[in-house]
Image (cartoon, rainbow over all chains, first blue to last red; front, side, top):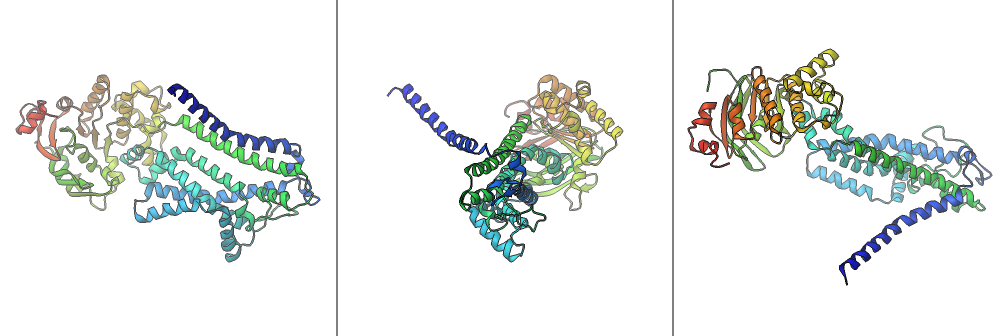
Length: 281
Length: 254
C-alpha cells in the first residue's frame, strides 16, 4: 500500500484514539451537569439536609470534605515534603534509602479500601481516636503521602545541580542552598503534587468509610474527635441507601463533588504552566 | 620560584575518584597576589586540583586523597576547619556562566546574604564595588533589579566573577572562565584579573595556552595528573625545561 495512505490511516486511528480518551470525560461531565444543575443553588450549598436528606442542602458534607482535606494537608505536607527533601538532598544511595523508596512506591499501590481498614484498626480502635476527623485525616494522610513524596522529590531533583554547587562555592551550607535556591525553584512542582494528592484525598470513599464518615449529623462537627459527613460517602449513601431519593439531589451532589475535583485540578495545572513559563532553566 | 610568602601550598597531593587516579604527587606553591596559571591538555587534573583547594570535591563520593593543602598556615582538610568560611575566603568561578535565579542584585549579594550581612548601605557598597571590579558596573547599573538571565553570556560570566568578589576573598580560583566568551568579553575579564591581582591571589585554568601566556606571573604544566614543570612566565612559555612542556606550548600536541 502507498506509504502516504498508510500514514493517513495511522493518523486517523490515532485521532480516533484521542477522541476516545476525551469523550468519556465529556460525557460524564455533561451527564452530571444536565441532571444535577437544577438542584444546585445557594440553598443547596449552604443549608443542612432535611426530611431524611430528601430535601434541604448538603452543607455538612461540603464542610466535612473541606475539613478532611485541611486535616490531610496539615499532616501530609510537612511529612511528605520533609521526606522528599531528605531523600533528594541528604540521603546517600545506600540499601536503606533504596528500601525507603521501594516502600513509598508500594504504598502508592495499596487499594484504598485497605487503607480504610488499616485506619480503622490503628487510629479508630488501637489508638482509641474513635471514628473522628482525626482518624479520618490521618488515614487519608497516609494514603496521600506517597503521592506527595514522589512528586516533591522529582521536583527537587529537577532543579539543576549547578545551583547547589554555586551556593556551596559562595560559602553556603547545604541547608542554605536548599532554603534559598532549590526549594523555591522546586515549589511549583511540589505545589502541583500537593494539590493532586489532596484532590485524591477529597474524592475517596473507602478510607473514610470506617474512620470518620457519618450517615447523618444534625450539626456541623465541632472538634477533631467528632465524626463528619463527607461528599463521596454522602453521595454513595444517598444513591444506594435512601429509598425515594430524588435523582436531582443525587446528581446535584455529584456535580458539587465533580466541580471541587475539577477546580483543584485546574488550579494545579495553572500553577504548573505559569511557573514553567517563568522558569529560568 | 620567588621568595614571596606563598598563599597556598599544595604538598604531595594525590587524588583519585571512582578508582581513577586524577592527580599524582603534586607539589606546588601558589604565590600571593599574583596570577598562577595551571595549564595543560584535558584530563590533566587541573580542574580537580582547583576543586580540592576550596574543598568543593567534598560534595563527591567515592574519592581518595593523600597529601596536604595549606592555606594561611592551616591544613585545609583539618577536621576543625569551617568549610563555609574557607569557601568565603577562597572563591571560585566556573567554566560556564551560572547565574542564580533572580536579579543581578540578588546574584551579587547572595554570598553576603548567606554571611548574614544585613546593613543596606554596606550591601549597596558591596554591590557597586564587586561589579566594578568585574568590569560590569557600567553595563548593569541601570538594571540591577532585572533578571540575571537576561544578560549576555559575557556579562553573565562577569556577574559570576562579581558574585565571588562580593565576599572579598583572598584567593580566586577560575576554571576556564572565558571559554565560550567572545574576544571582547574575554579581554574585559583578563583586564579585570590583571587589576585584581594587586589585591588577591589568582589561580586560573586558561582555555588556551595563549591566554595562559598572556596572564601568567607563574605557571604550572599538568599532564595526565602529573605536575610536569612549574616556573615563571618567561621560563615556562618561552624556554621550558621539560620536553613535554615545550611540545605542548608549541602546539605539537594538545
